[in-house]
Image (cartoon, rainbow, N blue to C red; front, top):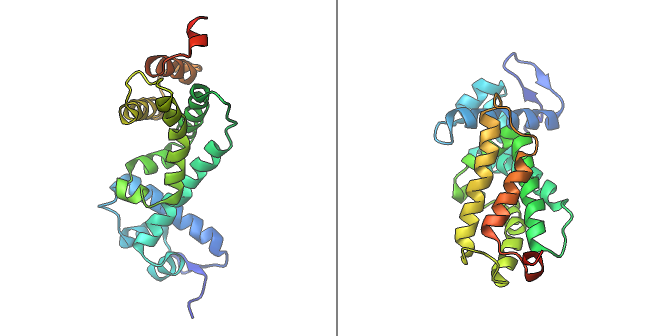
Length: 207
């Protein structure tokens, strides 16, 4: 029977498997961001975190199980935030609220966002939390398409515009912390995005 105690590189034992799992996941995330998926290996992870390979396999089964659990955990934390966004009957307002929550998550959690963003599509597509996040974020755009309110007229075209916008604003603030960013930059940018992509209702247009 495998002893559920994580041994570190100094030969010490850790009696808290939850703590060892969290430490292994954190080290995996850091290594992935440094070396990429192609450069990641359990051997490098052992050197990085100090836990033995048998301990890592005991917790996660195999390399793919470890990577899947890490990505699921990080995407789930994003889903929790966007699930909590109070929605209205106005899909354009819901876009503002949901995309603001998404961008806010990425700006506050640059490491998590970088991991999610750098994962390959076949990895994220297999993660239930990623599918839920995508469904929540796309729902207002689908409603607007049905109402004929997308200027582009094509959902996928607008989705690409929105994704490019969100990634740009998150990445700029994460990679250029030296810049004196306007504290209202996200809200101002969302205003411009909505004006550029979404037709106003007749009532809004008459105001």
